[in-house]
Image 1 (tube, helix red, strand yellow):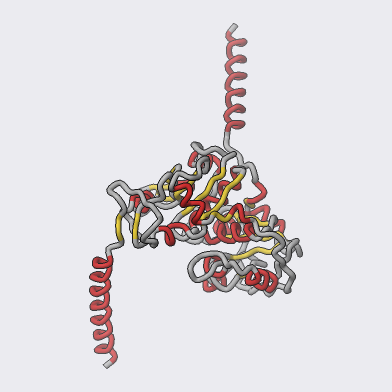
Image 2: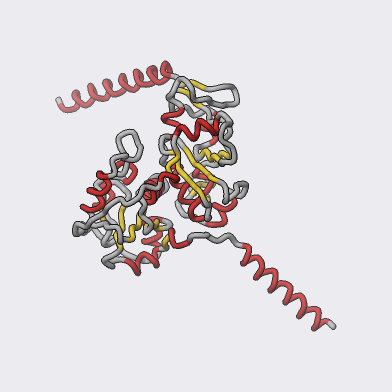
Length: 344
């Protein structure tokens, strides 16, 4: 009897364990996210190009063998001075052709740390916007590569020019400000709007435009930092996000959303929200989009664009900023005098 009971208990534990494994979240589109081991297998193949999304200085200090640099951070090179995509797609055709990317090339973007993680997803989103369907991101970035035991190099990669032509723009993944206005005014329903900024930005406490708060009818506010795993910071003892994408964490962050509905993400400049867009693609959302203009445009418009905040729209405190700048100017002038004195 005891033997049978033990057997049954073992069977139950085994089934529950297997069931728990089955319940673990998985990516719907895992091919978009490569591991260091998977990337290692692709290095050197003629139809694969690896792009280092960090600035040129970091690239020169050490990068993944065979990786190219675009000359600056991806979020700067791949967008205009206002942090928006180039509407003149010929600029992309010239750039990608120059660095050896063709329409048949698999492109892998990678980042260095938490700060430039969204640089890689800017690259991903821009290429999908241009209709390129062979684009990936290295999960964990350059640190994942090093942890896997692979070396870095300082040898600069000189790619052979190729031919890249934009065949069809994917307008559906580019959310226009006019669409956001319809959502804010209640004219367009059934669309899920994600605010990817921090909670302080969302409520208007952290003010980064002329007016601060959030777009009316936002579905959820999920900071991009809250979609990443966390580990204890040895210095502060507090949990801090690490730049790795985990299906369990991401699935939990967006669990309230319907994957079959159109879902738009936004942030301050449409940068962090490209990470949200990428995560939605990984999860298998049917109609995800990024609002490229985001809060920088919405919050700086004094008319027509409604804003919500706990205590009404907040306004940028120019007087406080000017006061701070004056103090900094005096400090700089004092330091300059001290340096001149030492030289004498």
